[in-house]
Length: 351
Image (cartoon, rainbow, N blue to C red; front, side, top):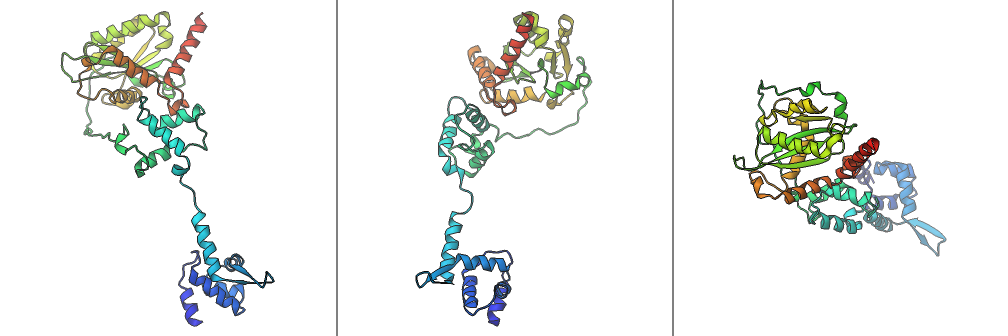
């Protein structure tokens, strides 16, 4: 028994009982030892011994007598361990997993989060039938889906630019520091960001002028003939004529960078109520919304590819895809839905 006592004291407290522990319980219990005595031998709580004795009881003489059996207790323990733990949702919710894989590689080309949001928001799957978007991305990392990590559009993005502190003396107009801080909260419609997307950067190539509405996330892509201030202003004038008398309500402010192509943008303030703000030099985060949406364009038109090779209908299809993409930030509504809602409100008020 001294040898038995010596071996049991080295068992770490809190660990599950082993088969040898159960044999010790059976032997000591048969000798009439108390629960506390057995607990000291096993270096565990007396309640642990009590629960173990209840679990490992077998009937003798047609149920008239009971005793503890170590082998029976061990079998019950192993059965319980086999059935415990959380079941992998990947196996249980295979119908939703199949739906995700089909739509990811389908014509929509949505992100995993967008697929999950659309499926649950429209009632195609309940929360109990689906796994959350974070779990989907974990499944991709673990190799459980047909989707590979390299299939995710943003997975391979890298910041290869060296950060440099540069001073820019160019001043094209009103600084973003003068912009109303309330605009940053995205609670009011009509505040836009503006940028250019270049193709192969040759003089004869066309460029894309992009606009992004901060509240609804609506995204406009306008193809212009070159990267000049005159072309940018011509495109803006066409846009202004399209919205006519409601321009001032739809385009309250425009925030852009200090590129030479936007040198004449401040002229808008002379012919409309639109206020134009210029971001800090080399600070893309001042207009981060339009920058992120420009990256969506790159899924279709890679860097270095000539813009002029893309027809207006193809550019329009890219714009429709961006504006028809369900967004988590919009409770999985699309930018187009919210933008149309705001336009309806404006036109109804003026009617």
